[in-house]
Length: 471
Picture 1 (cartoon, rainbow, N blue to C red):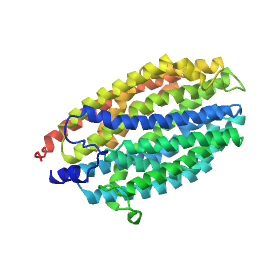
Picture 2: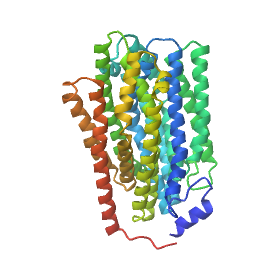
Picture 3: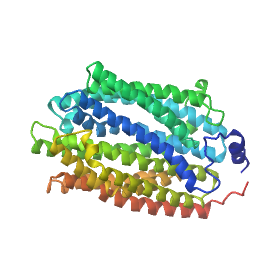
Picture 4: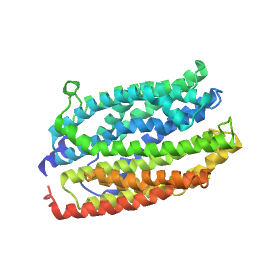
């Protein structure tokens, strides 16, 4: 393909991987490792939010932040899912060598990010307290969670734009630039956390404000990088507008991902509500189980973000190959992504289980809270490779242009199953173990379905799409 050849040998920069040619295993690692480091740093900074909030001395500060996660993700994921559409569309157009459509997709997606982020801000401000009450938050926990959530949603436009800018960089094979920038802004976040909490005497409000300001810094720096880019993805403020074709394609590939993320968050909210009920029944007036669950969840998120980097690799690699018509080679993409994500998942599990005591001690000291955190880690991280397989299968389907299929599989195999589990099994045995078991069982079902559909779609495409001639 002449256009493809031209892009990779003239417009290509050293930091942008050529995903379409040569052995794949090393490139999957080169793509995923900076992304994994970026994600892990972000989770580290989020964990620092909880730790520093706990240093404020305000009772329930850690637990209050932990109870907001599912609700915040519910609102954000509805719109952040479109960044997956940005990744898919930009990568596919790069694979085709279509510079004009890459430009249209880049500028359209950033306008969408600004609009969607503003909508998130408005929605979040109005519904946060009623939703937190429905989840079971009460008393000072409710007040702290509401304060944190309102400030956090105030920065939603910057969070959205930063995510879309990162999606554009990933689509062209550059995962190192986000690593460098988010490392710097993350450190800024931690320093502001310490300043607002320890110097200014703030609590969860200081932590939330630091998060907002660090995202503003990320948007500025990521925007400058893309404005200086010499390739297809160069950003020009004068070109910011909605292109109808790019908008339709981004919505087509991103809307299912957004709905899936939102419904995942909804099922997690119901699970969070069950955990709050167990806490209220076990330690009335206290928050030990909520705190322990939040601590375990924070540690578990390190494993999730590590494996999610390979999901992003699967989306980008598959999208570029699909755009270039190299359907047969997608089989190699799948094999390498499944191998890498399994290796990462097993390593993350070993680290978390081995060092669970000192890690949990960073968050909580109450024996009941520690026990709750350990329960979550054992039940949910030991089989974490199943979640890793589920994510890769989903990424391949999205890259093949089957985002709706991926979403439907996930909703049936994961969300629907968890809801049925919470409504039927948990009332019979209302314990943390029973609640947490809904996760690995649903991962197994969904991973098997994703793999099956990925193989079927690829086989059908191989029969209908001719392979391109070698350049």
